[in-house]
Length: 230
Image 1 (tube, one colour):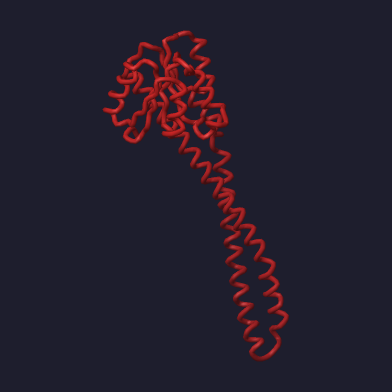
Image 2 (tube, helix red, strand yellow; image 1 turned 90 degrees about the horizontal axis):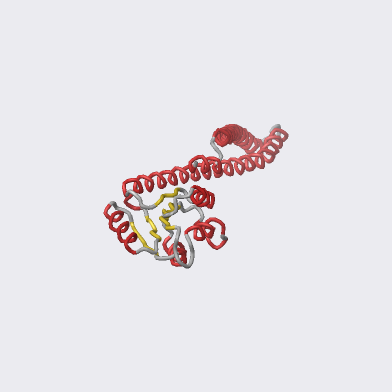
């Protein structure tokens, strides 16, 4: 999981940036650095990291302000799901709660132990990967439902014309010669087509019912994200 994950480090203290850069690069992460909140927002747009490690107390824009912009500003809508681990020298419970309520995925108080930070990085990345898998599964279910609806509509649209062909063939079948031969063949083809459409109708209906059952049995994504963050 680690080898291709991109982490943006945001801190106005150069020593912290260099330390994390060296340690995380050795562990296989790709690293970009920013020294303030404004620079961080530019990097997010250009690079779209998998995780942001964000110091709270910085010039220009604080970590709280950067988090608020990423989570609520329409300009950054496509980046709003990037997970954030916030660092702060402030150990007040109120500060932690505020950071988490803004949308940060974790809050670590300085001074920190690197092993603990690494463990939290991996937990946040695994959590995000799980959420991504569920998002993709929900999208597959949505697509399968759409396909089922279109196929059912197609089946319904063909049924009446085929029935009309069959009924017309039945009406013409007593006539002699090549007309009767043609009608007999049309009647046979129409009957086979109707049988296939009925089988397709049943199969697609079953698929749609299964998709509905799966969807109802899954945890709603917003609730899952809340539980994982809690």
